[in-house]
Image (cartoon, rainbow, N blue to C red):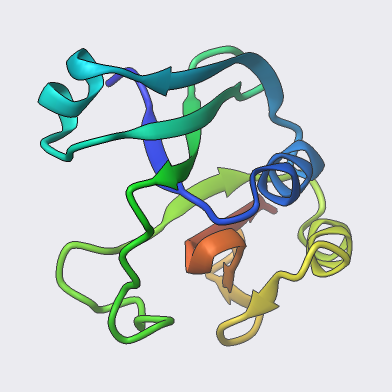
Amino acid sequence: MDNVAVVVDDLDAAVAFFTELGMVVEGKASIEGVWADRTVGLDGIRSDIVVMSTPDGHGKLELTKYHAPDLSEASPENPPPNTLGLHRVMFAVDDIDDTIRRLRAHGAELLGEVAQYEDMFRLCYLRGPAGIILALAEQIG
């Protein structure tokens, strides 16, 4: 797998959010033209993208801000984790409580609570930019 793409309405805020998780900007580009229209299957695409990578360089996230055509809203606005075709992106973290605190400053909201799985992990789901669901996992055992 090369990357996971997320459409966002505020590119700068999304970059700040994922930077807080330790991701780094790998590249930026403006996308438009017939080739983009043909690839995506939309007409008149104008977008900006930022590709971010995990600190180890193995995982990549492409954040996309469409300027045209207009965004299509998801329905419902914040679908639950069991929605068909949607799940989550998981990040391993060293300190889940500190990570949640830092992400809340960027608008993240817990969907439930931090729970412990046996003596191995502390886990939670939260909603981040553009409604994306993130999972955090802190290994404890």
